[in-house]
Amino acid sequence: MPSWNGSENLKRRYRLLSKAQAQKAREAAAGTKRKLSRAEQKQIAALIRQAKGDGKAHTAQQTIPYLQMYPDGICRITEKKYSKSVVFEDINYQLAQADDKTAIFENWCDFLNYFDASVSVQLSFINQGTQRGEAEKAIDIPARDDAFNSIRAEYSDMLKNQLSKGNNGLVKHKYITFSIEADSLAAAKARLARIETDILNNFKVLGVAARPMTGYDRLKVLHGVFHPEGEPFSFDWAWLAPSGLSTKDFIAPPSFRFGEGRTFRMGRKIGAVSFLQILAPELNDRILSDILDLETGVIVNLHIRSIDQSEAIKTIKRKITDLDKMKIEEQKKAVRSGYDMDIIPSDLATFGSEAKNLLQDLQSRNERMFLLTFLVVNMADTKRKLENEVFAAAGIAQKHNCALTRLDYQQEAGLLSCVPIGENLVPIQRGLTTSSTAIFIPFITQELFQTGEALYYGLNALSNNMVLCDRKQLKNPNGLILGTPGSGKSFAAKREMTNAFLITDDDIIICDPEAEYFSLVQRLGGQVIRLSPTGKGIDGKPQYVNPMDINLNYSEDDSPLALKSDFILSLCELVIGGKEGLQPV
Image: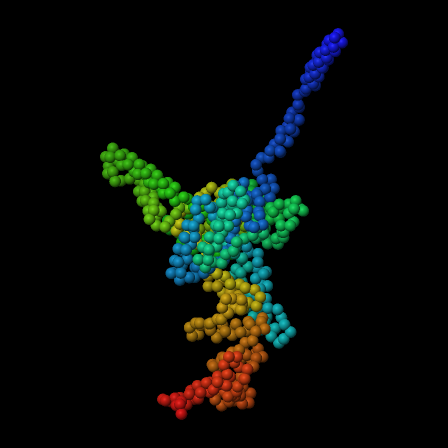
């Protein structure tokens, strides 16, 4: 019993001792606590700031406004925003007849009306002027080991002269990028695929060739925008995992610099982004094509967002109510002042009538309301060249009673809104109806510039670009040369024959009742067969056609003898002629 009590006391004493030791240790630790110096505080604050980040882009890659590009062409812009792109070709709109123009315009209006308020649309037009060498290569006629190299050299000089009249070195691309918000990639993929199918079907109605873009295609386009000097794009999806790089590393330019307010620098190029202020009461369908016809590389972007129809009508009704309230107050003021109550400020009268017309368009016509942002990017090697190009673009806008205004201190947002990703970072928007938005019609004229054994067929009437075409590659290889007397039909035929002779191995057979092509065939070392009543050929020797000659392998189905007999009968009928013709007897 005493031993047990003794052990209990021992335990209690040990507990008290350990508590005292813990207290002593705490006191010792409190004694070692010291104040941090100012330099140490700064160092810790800097480390915390570095870990948090300041929200600004410090590398060219961070500036590019998307999170991830997938191989199937879907781009993840933000956590919940995804986009896809379609590339489309041009059609002949500006050169079409009035009825055809109206039909294309109405179909384009229907195309725009397809997009609801949940889909943002970006139309991108990228002119890249770095392909002059490729155009010259396409028209080059290499020398051969024969007697016609002098003709080849002369014909080649003529083609180079014609090439300089247009801008075939300027390659024009057109893209439509549509973006939606979705909770996950799977949800976005299903919806984007549906929208893509509908867009391709709508383009088919317009007669426009279009195809969806893969992730590689989209990265190549972005690389082209960020490297305007034409550096080659090399990339493969298999390179990402081993290298530890992202897709942005393969497309980013050497540097971005946005500190100058009115201009930006991208690599060695200097550029400026402007937006179009739409001031004109009526727009012309030539405004977009005139800007795109500039000889220099220009990037034009239209961000279009539809407003929900019922929301748009409610907003306009509210505005009309506000205007009516202001009108009543002005009338009360007029009565109090003792002058005619019909005299109200002209602005109120104008805005009131315009708002009522707009409401009528939305309610009774097939019109919707859109918010439009129209951006133009000019780039050049020097500041002087850039100012000249911006001035030229501003002149076109002025001609159409609009203004091209520089985005001061918003150059970064402007440039990033002009890459075909589907993100609009510029908050300047203009409300337009469907037909007003559709006036920026993206179709001008179809270019035909094929390579290989393509023949020269003149210049495009609108763009002055060369028409190079290999008819054997087209749906219908046949051709007709039509024109008034003296307009150069025979010359065009001779030019095409010479061209075919110089660059192809095709046979050329000419049926020539007027003996126009005799000297051309002789110069090119061809054979001339002369058919005449006297039977005398070119060299004086007799040349005959024997109508009785028969080839027993002539026909697979019918008897060659029966066919020849029919031919002889019809020939005799023509030869005898007369009133009665050939009698049965």
